Length: 362
Ligand SMILES: *Cc1c(COP(=O)(O)O)cnc(C)c1O
Image (cartoon, rainbow, N blue to C red):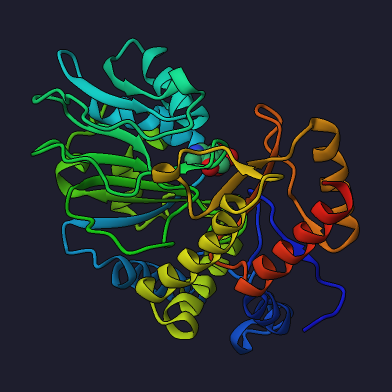
């Protein structure tokens, strides 16, 4: 391992598996004996076709997707999905439910509203600064979909169990916990995730869409905003973000072949999260901000006794090789993002550092 690498707790773009970065480096100038870099080959070439097909096949295997789901790689980030979802699925007289669990849900709601779509915010945790995931929600029976944010990157909360919406398909923004745990995809009509948290570099958004929702897209939409455009052309209506898709392919291979799949990944992620939360629960210096039954296993948000101590902590942590621990600028405090690629060792070493910091400053 290169000794100049530090522990990266950034929220996104975020850490990638070192073995993936090394593989990219090794093949960067001459991809698969093509004599070209992967960034130089045509997206219409056999090389890229193999890359995207393998990325799709691995996504389907990892999430156990049946024939009714299509795997797409789009641009515009997760943020474009906030607008495309209501645009494609809600016609006149249609309604959809949204659960507001934080900053990203709020943005998704706003994008539906500014299009004049009819939506219901059926639950919100804004009353407690989004520190929990709502329960006992009354969903609208004839809604076209129910939108949730599976993991709230900024607030540090996560749905432990997905809500039961009966026959209404769930749509989830899984940007910050995609492929971090195994779950039943059947209730989901659409899942989307900006790649830069848990899958790859910035510049591509994974969209998994089920046929029943895909069929709703009206052909009056601008071509580039219609899901069918990308579904019909295997995400290659126009030039896809080739390098980002390639990196995702390697991350998926790492997940399947090195880690062993989602159950194994989840066990490691649980252990990492438990290491931090157990430490907070035993501490009077550090405190987690999310309610215990809503805690995220991906973004661990916490406070120190004062803002001064928090900024000293972030600074000294950085000097000791732990990067990215400052909380989101909108909420302050501290946050350790411990996505799939963050090793348990990084978390254990962080806890050691935190203990020492407490002894000196507590
Ligand atoms: C980061 C993030 C986004 C925004 O993603 P972009 O790709 O930058 O548009 C949306 N939702 C969640 C949950 C996120 O963590």
